[in-house]
Image (cartoon, rainbow, N blue to C red; front, side, top):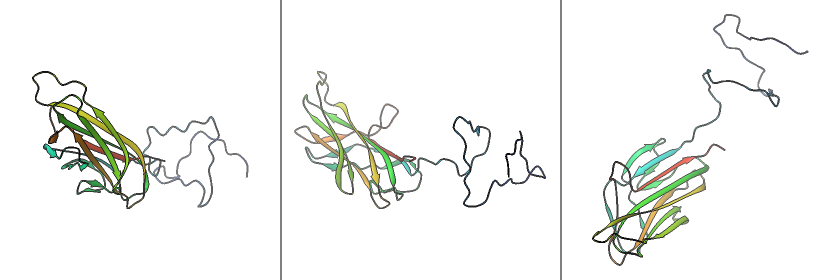
Length: 193
């Protein structure tokens, strides 16, 4: 068969389905051709960035000084697949994920240390450390935030947790909400690959 040239293809009745090819065949769109589907309903095209979560700490959490401690994330904003539970995320779908955590500390002295760590299956995979450089005179506590993120390759049974460590020569507090937003949280989503 040769080349078919036309400007419009419709079903015979005008309201049915038009099928191109049969199972196992490939349709090739040549380089330089634009396929405009902006006004069409698209199914089976692309993908979704799910599973995805956004969870945060809703109350202050006190932790022991200079001790790695799991952050208790008690409020879910987004949990697309119901895979966040018991302060850990088990996406249950293998893939590459972007995961980020942010921990807001109440620290009182110059030189105090604040860490944020991502754990995969109980082991550290990413971390960050910051030191306070200035606490305003007369302030009892100042807010300092440590943020960590990474691309994690996860199998369907892997899980991710957010850990904190503050070194402040005394009890350390992890701040929760305030100022109209989340202060301590973890988020993550599957990348489309």
